[in-house]
Amino acid sequence: MSRPLIIPLPGNEAMAQSLAEIMGAELGALESHSFPDGETYMRIKTAVEGRTIALVCTLADPDRRFLPLSFAARTARALGAGRVGLVAPYLCYMRQDKSFLPGEAVTSRHFADLVSAEFDWLITVDPHLHRYKALSDIYAIPGRALHAAPLLGAWIGRHVNQPYLIGPDEESRQWVSAVAGICGAPYCVLTKQRLGDRSVRIAPEGLKPLGSATPVLIDDVISSGKTMQEAIRIARPFSTRKPVAVTVHGLFAEGADVMLEREGATLITTNTLPHASNRIDVAALIAPAIAEFVKSS
Image 1 (cartoon, helix red, strand yellow):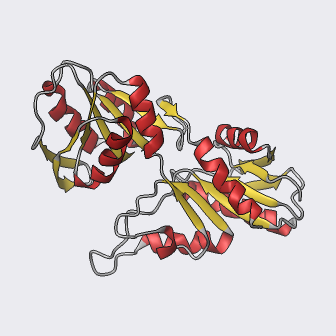
Image 2 (spheres, helix red, strand yellow):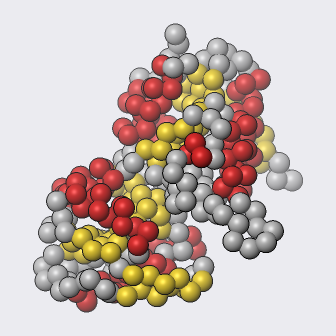
């Protein structure tokens, strides 16, 4: 059996390189660019015939990224690839899991159908499942949802002095409790009322003076940053130490990272999305999952 082939889509080269090194896999090459009219040119420059392929593409900005990803998968199959899998460290279109108003698209299901039609398997890190219990609820292909909580807990335990973990809302409780258990830190969860896409109100219920303990705010995703911003403002007066904001997926839409740093927080993220705040590497978490799919090919 030939070595698995890891091929990055543009912007995913660092993650693909790490995965190939950990697995002893071959790092493939893909050429892609946009024509003046916005259409995509695609060429896979590595022989793929008969091989198991893992395309690496984190799916922030998915409307722009998915069509080239689909082209890459179809090109690999046209060139004779055996199985084609997707490694999407960040998986998009998971929030709209229900039709709240008449006529609303349940985009999580629609996107799952598109991915399932192109790939043989899927690996991601901490998707926002919410009302779904597992990827298999909406994806028709085998999938692995990996969990970064142990990595977050280990990093906090090594790098933060006297951490006190804070969840900005009830949805974050599962994250905060899991990470707190790993690093042996106390925690609490704040109460949030969402007023709109970019407006929230958070109450400091359960938060007590922390003295010299470091407030560490935990969430799975930071997008607009408004929830984390409000949580930082709530937590900051309770401690003499600078707050630390830790998240798995740092989307940081519309300059949210700059906004949070101006609030006086240190940002810490995993590398599911490339960013200057990346301190926690998930490649060693993903590599064994790829190896399992390759072995079952």
